[in-house]
Image 1 (cartoon, rainbow, N blue to C red):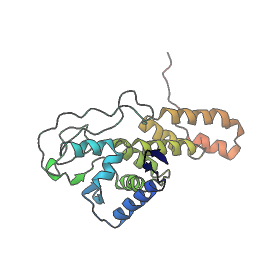
Image 2: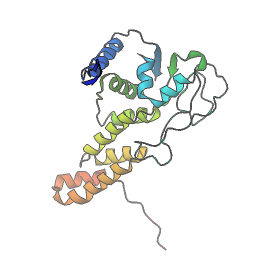
Image 3: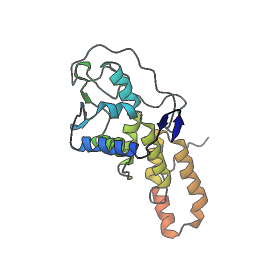
Image 4: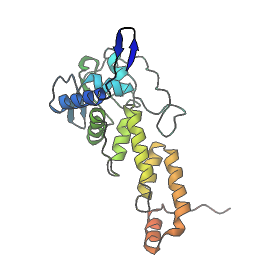
Length: 231
């Protein structure tokens, strides 16, 4: 509480939780939704204000009046997909008919300027998008080794760094003999250098503590050696 003359300012710490709960309730009941996202043929009715408040991609898209911003991803110098300045928005391309292929192979998202309330997200899985939307409306994201790669991809395409961080932390916590190969594969696919370092550190520090069965499982998970020509 702060005072200024006869005025008193009081902060309500529960307001943000109540607001998020209210937005989630509106989303669940499909009330006042003003944009429809489509991924792999599945539709998700959402609120532009929620999307724009959490995603740099949607913020640029909606504020451009229906333009077609370039798909956002990792910028030069970004670390583990967690940062880097958002890419600059390029000039809008020529008008395209809804549902036509993107004119640029680098574009991962197709948004028809004449259908700004209906966006087809190319390159996003429906499972990954659903879990990311769950996070936007609840602050919770459900991750597993079967879904984390899809969630990570969507979070990077839509430039939602909070979800990207949660995915990276999940992968770091999942490094084990059983998961080593899968974690390393995802880390290599998304350029997660810190995760790869942690996996290699685990391999070096813990390999001597493994029993026979664990050692055999680890060896089975490693990639085959590459033959190099002798000189």
